[in-house]
Length: 180
Image: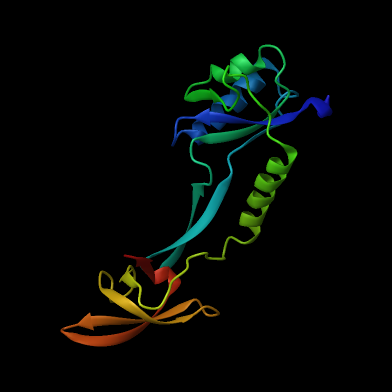
């Protein structure tokens, strides 16, 4: 049986992915098809924001509008999933037939999800000298400035901000600024 399990991509209304996952899970268990659909997955990405001086962890959908499903799409299962609220259909061929993902794609996506869980703290924001930024946290919240220096190791920026007509250097971390 397990050699017939393949990964498919279900298209969902954007923003409703968690509800679609919940609906699919509950419908599958209600009908007793849990052995045909072992996993329903929404690849999520963790990121951090500074709010009032505190680092807050948040999650966002890595592929908005898509839900991954490992299933043996035999018989009526395909129609049951297509009939779930907020499901648009499967990614597939021109006739609308679901096409399973290649194993290399599955490994890449599942590996990416694992990597994101392990490296949630790593920030992938790239700044460059001379770039305009806006301060989002701290006493200079709302000020704009220009990046003078970048310290990649400490994730800090030296920013020149105009305060009362004078340029003032500030040292801010990546979490305290956003690109303008």
